[in-house]
Length: 274
Image (cartoon, rainbow, N blue to C red; front, side, top):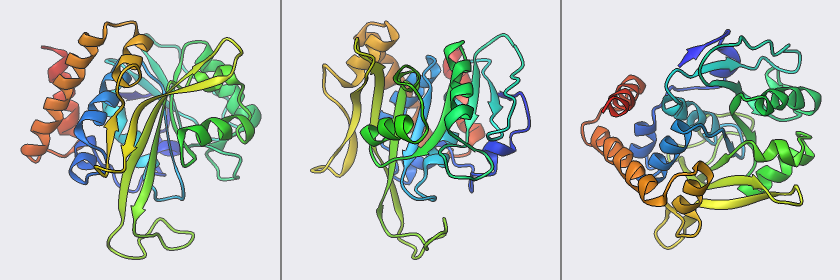
């Protein structure tokens, strides 16, 4: 992935450059949902990751997903409300990286007119990866409309929302630092967004938390991978096979203890040349 501008509006919010393999090893996300995200992003999905307080892991997850963007992808890091969004015209898919969609006054956060200007570019063909505060996909949809002030049409262009949550331990108040050494982050929900004929945003569950197993699991048909296949216009068996292939790659990287982001990027490139 090539940056088209100064990446600091995106990278300054990321404490550690963890890979998706790191997140699998840490049990933040199982292999199968991670492979689902890989395939969807590779096939052009936009993604927002959402969570509660700073330190819940939403920026870490979003950054780990950048390894899965399509071949030749370029990224423009949005530098806040005053960014003129003069994104260079290039061949290949271009992504807006938005540190956070929020009305809070931090330098790189955007909402209202600035968010609508960004999503005007998404309507014109750009894609987006970013974060926001929400504890469920439904809450993310509400916040994108109420706080960020996006239209239902623009919200539905997000495609995917993944929810990360602190399930054990706590952070120091007002800090991303641990109050103890037992913090556990888990991805608890992945939803696919679309608009219905009444221009309302609807959610299709791709993966959800299974309380009995204590882990994130892909949803059963007609949702889950079947819904993702309909979104992409690809037969479900083909998508199942492609996701299983990517799950095998991730599992092999875990077994070989190859956790560095460069190792993941190399594995992605190798799979694409097969």
